[in-house]
Figure 1: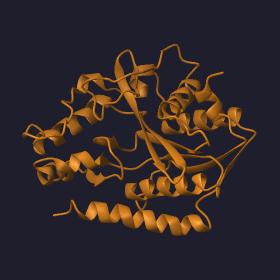
Figure 2: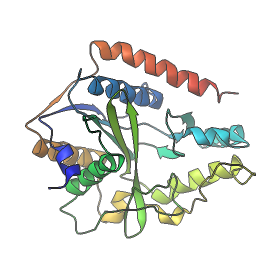
Figure 3: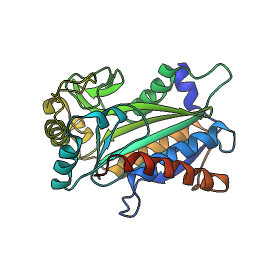
Figure 4: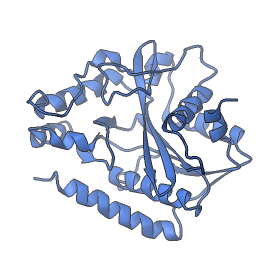
Amino acid sequence: MLESTLLLQQKKWRIIDHSSVNPHFHAMQSFAIDDTLCMSVGSGYSPPTARAWVHANTLVLGIQDTKLAALQDGLDFLASQNYEGIVRNSGGLAVVLDEGVLNLTLIFPDTEKGIDINRGYDSMYDLIRLMFQDFPQTIEAYEIVGSYCPGSYDLSIDGKKFAGISQRRIRKGVAVQIYLCVTGSGRKRAELVRDFYTYAKFMEPSKYHFPDVRPEVMASLSELLKTDISIQDVMLRFLQTLKGLAEEIYSNGLQGNELEWFQLYYERMNERNNKIKP
């Protein structure tokens, strides 16, 4: 068995389910929660944790995106499309969140030898393949040129990207995050990102590289699997797959010290986002 799959085989998986859209639950809170869980799992306060989260119309910017020459013009464009722009606490580039996008996070404690970065990515890639192993389509991992937030672990079917994986490490905790475009039009999401970059003038001379987004290389799982599949369907596959990999799974929310850690990380998210407000 692959080492990355072995990483998924934990004695206990703690589950935190934030997959139901709540207008009072902001995407900035989600990133603060993942940092909190990194701290918690890395310190041994919590067992390995898997979290699912969905947010309404949000374009999540990476730190590099804040260097765009006309960022405010881009943010104004998003507002005109009923999207909010926020800055996450890590690198990478802009990604779309909406009610058809499911985000999954796996938080592991780092091992004595350390969890290799590729092993972290491979663990999420393995999980997604296990979740959809009953479909005939092949899920591949390589950079899809022309996609938004491109990377070597873009997940695609027939050359069209439906997911991207990222990693964040805090205090001996490793968080592997993925966004899955489950329903709706992957092309329309890509058009939104392309137009944001156009308004934010990514073509201005810059030492930073921004993607030349080509909407035709993006799609949703529903489009690629040629079947109606909902967020709830994917959540069921997620939970069933983890259950098959662990001796025990259980569900609860933040508790004890985690509530204090969350306030700290949420304040940091607010400080970062205050810098892009006019």
